[in-house]
Amino acid sequence: MTAKMLLLPLIIVALSVSYSVFTDSVKVSGQVTTSNLEWRYVDGSFEYGDYKLENGEFNPQSPNIVGENLGTVNCDAEDIQNGATTFSCTISNAYPGYGFYVDFKIKNTGEIPSKLKQILVDCSGANCEQNGVAQSMRIAYRLSYNTTGGLQNENPDGGYIAGLTISQFADNVTQKLSGKIFNKNGWIKFGGDEGNTIYFYFPYSSNPPQGETLRFNITFVFTQFNS
Image (tube, rainbow, N blue to C red; front, side, top):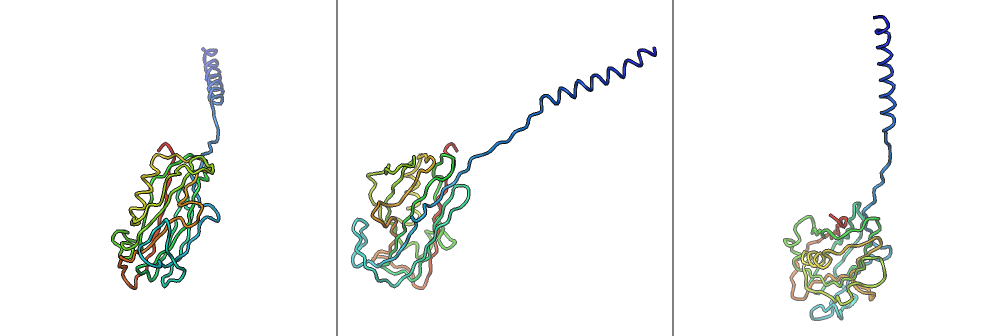
């Protein structure tokens, strides 16, 4: 009896040692690094300026503009985390015949292939279709892009599209880029190498309200390719 009672603690100790060895043998540790989703505007590509239409209606193929004007515009661009880039403009003293342009090129600088999810527009913190100045403003644009980061324009036949409201501009660009997957260094540009890329203008037939200032934001939001 005494021998059996002495043997039992030894068996328990042996089992404990065996279990300890087993649990140590399956312990796993590691580190996972995720890729980033990031779009940025290309240094030196963001420019803007304003002008006055000389006469008649605006023609983006051959703008009939003169340098002097009475209105003012100030624009800036900003890169936002998680694949978003925005540019903003503030317009004061808009009148029939006033216009301005924005040069804008953005590039996929992250590691993840991505696609355009949506373009968000905001006009002075309100719906752009309900803003008086924005209702009178029209946009003409010409789109270029390359999904692989090369120099070639993959939309070579894309001419100017004119007469759009700011909301129609957002919808039109989103539709044109639907399903396009942009690899690292892929880019989107509005216009050709001739300069002015997006025209914002107030036709002579428009009637923007006097004494109002418009600030609008256009934000390009991207998502990963398989979302």
